[in-house]
Length: 412
Image (cartoon, rainbow, N blue to C red):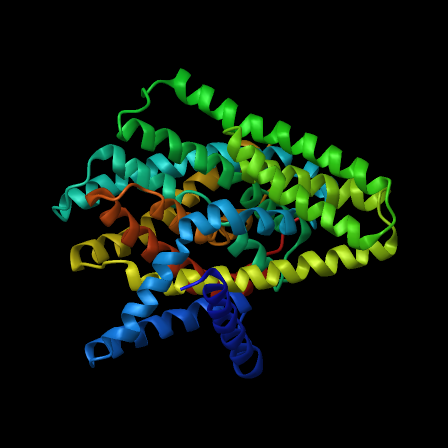
């Protein structure tokens, strides 16, 4: 199957499911597309049992060729993060900078260790053999809140500005930290890295801080180029090159591509929008990146739903995944509650904001992509289905209820 055929199939299915939802149902597009793709995948499994092995095998080969982990982490994610960062106001983010910073760093670390320790106990009770270091790795996989899922939901929710800034800001930054955590723990598990604070600290400096610095340089370069133009077609092309080229450069330099793209997007969306763009350019730029965001979101959530075709579920592992759902939520509650309470003397927060940040911390494609990025082996065969169960619950159940939950949350 050629690349063009694969893209054509994915776009056609995304368009079909989006149309059915828009015409007859009216759910948030991303959630609806994933739900339809899950139903579609389960229907293919049913067809397989009725003698349609060729169709099911064809679908499995399609998903295997796409490789969600590679496609998201080294492709779609850069464009989705930039599109999201374009619309986050730096002034609003600065008001919440300490909480966002704590949630994106300490929150990821706390969630990783709490989930890892809890799952080690649960898996031991279920007599499922998974070393402790790989339980921590599962914690790192499910620790980040997914910016794609979160930003897609926030668009349709009338959320107080302060709360939406906290949720969006954390989701944009914490995936870069989570990837660093994932790389560090995986290196320790495989014996490639020593379990020392110095080693992990150096990795964090290289990946995270390097990504932030590179993002600033990219954003400044993009701002300089845009300021010298008044041609919206060329200016949009410059932003595309900034995203694709910057993300590729960050990967080559072993720096965090997600963090680099987010910082560049914030600079272009704020200083670039204010001082380097005409109203016409701003309008066309927003329309272009809004369309890119919608199309890639639909394709990504379609892939997440179709991924069930190649994930192997055994009853004990399925039970472990279901047990992980409340544990991940409890760990998230602690990871949110501690920073919020620590900052309470300096900035007012309500108990409802803690609950809103907990329930609004959706898991998504990044968790699945990290699980798929694990080397083939028995550990991957355990971590992947458990992570998939957590993600499906988060997107479908939390995603469908978070609009009502956040809409009723009032805070200053």
